[in-house]
Image 1 (spheres, rainbow, N blue to C red):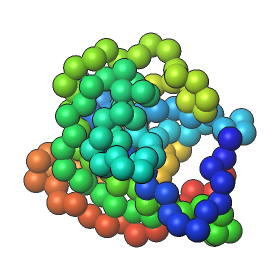
Image 2: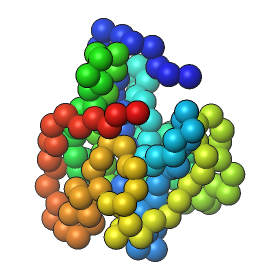
Image 3: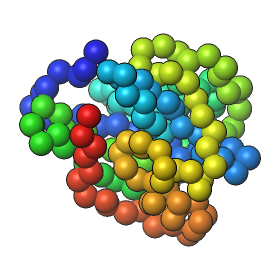
Image 4: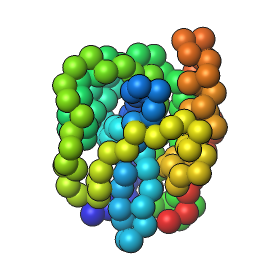
Length: 154
């Protein structure tokens, strides 16, 4: 089910989690199209960004994560005006739990551990593959960046 249009942007938090040199992605299927997102989701009223991200990671992946610092901020603004999402991507590390073997349902089809070199060949939303590669290569020295408005047509 698509989120209803509203008068204000939705805030979505996501995590760059690297496990054994591979990036953890959540594979979605919507209207017959597959695409990938970083683990994460919407921030609920009264919830901090870190609390929301920890909750979403646990729900989607079964992992407990230690949330690091912000890496990127960007907007996803549908040209029709029906949707505006503010994406905040954090670095994170696995602190416990076990990677889920079954998808939690809904649009989520599964979890993929992807070699960083494959990121640019995937339908990644928002389209931040090159920035993810820069952050991975820079390690702890990557500085948070505002990427502007990024939108992927359905």
